[in-house]
Length: 118
Image 1 (cartoon, rainbow, N blue to C red):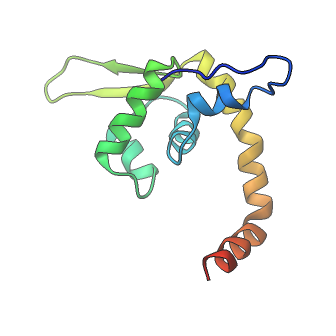
Image 2: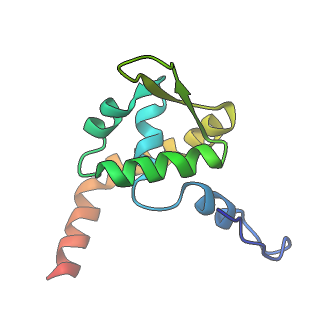
């Protein structure tokens, strides 16, 4: 993942944030990791609608960005979990106000999206 370069004088930082956590699934994955380590299967169940392949890809990208850490216990059967790094926690702190906004505006946003789809 490369972080886009822009004019620092006019940059609000969204390009950097979106390069790290952009897309449909990464914010949801981070939300579910906010309270502590989670195993792959737990995340798969928590993030409704995500495929195994996409979850693996998104976790790899988050790990590559230094947002999460994959811990392999080297056991049989395999035991692996994912934990948010301190850097990742700063991103979660930025996401939580968006969660609150979504809760407050769920009805209005849903109505708007439904009317656009018609």
